[in-house]
Length: 151
Image: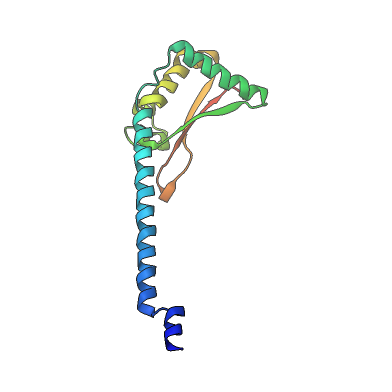
């Protein structure tokens, strides 16, 4: 009976070793996933911090498509973009404080959108709003860009 019990019920220290190995495997997998997510995020921020590569005509057509779709859905404003605060030179502080000149803190695609609005949409009566849309850990997070045309 003694030999059979040892086969059926391993010693506690053996189970502890197995559990520790499983825990280490889980931790390693979690670390790999976190590193991959972080690398993906850095690559995205790098890509978004550079010009889009679209021509002025392509940008205007894209804006028209987004606005027309929103109008067909009965909206008077539409969020056209959301980006991490790291694409602002001050991490969104000026936008959060609604300081004059906040647009000078924009880089990359968010700056292109602002310029598109200033050049083509503002003269036609459209409004633009950049606002912090989340506050992870109580700090400014992502920023949304809203184009509006209603009252």
